[in-house]
Length: 262
Image (cartoon, rainbow, N blue to C red; front, top):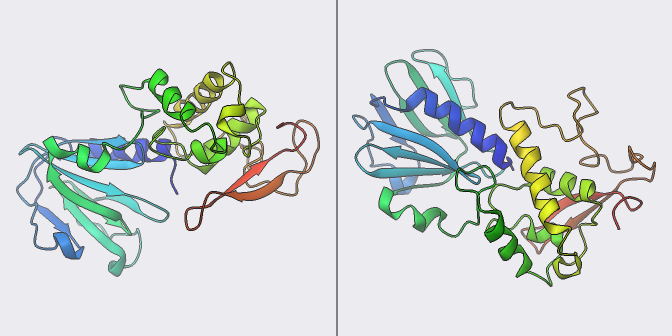
C-alpha cells in the first residue's frame, strides 16, 4: 500500500494538472457513481489527507479516491495513449483541454458535498504531512493504545494518518524499539522522538518517488531492515527477522533486528 508521502506527491502532481481547470470529460466507472457526469465542473484543488486523495470542485463537492494496494493515477497529454494499465482497470477519467488524468484500480471512490468531507476522512488522526500537523494530539491517541503492539498502533490511521509498513518498520529500527513492544511499555521520552523521526523521514522523501531511510539512493542501500529478512543488519550484523502483525485480514508484514531493537 502506498505510504503517505507517495499519496502527497501524487496529489501535488494532480493539483498541478487540474487545479483551476474545467473538465471536458469526467467519468467514474464504478456502479454507484456511473451516472455522475463531471464534465463542465471546475477543479478547485487536489489535496492529500493521509492516504486519501481529495478532489475539491468549485461547486462545493469533493471526490475521494484511495489507492489501497494497487491503485494509481496517471497523467497524459490530451489525446495521447493511456499507459497505466488495461482499459477494464480504469475507474475514473478526468480530462481538461491539456491533460487526461486516468485512475486505475482505484478504491473507495465517493462523491460528497465538501462540507461533509468529515464523513470520509474525519476518523483519521493527525496527518504527518498535513499543514495542520498536531504532534501532541498524535501522541495522545497513540498513548491511549497502551496494550497494543507499537507496530500495530503506528499503522492505525485513526492514530496517525499516512504511516505505512515501510516507515513503521524503519522508524522503529532507528528508535531501537521492537515492533512487538506494547505502547504502554515504551517510555514517555522515546515515543515523541519515534513519531518525529518517522515524520522527518516522510518529509525528506515526499518530493521524489524514491524512498530512502538510510540517506543513500543506491540500489540495495535505501533501507535499514525493510524487505531485508535473512540478511545481516547494517549496524550489528544480526540476521534481520520477518513476521506479521495485526489481526486477519488486516495483518501486515514487519521486519526488525533482534540485536538493535529491544
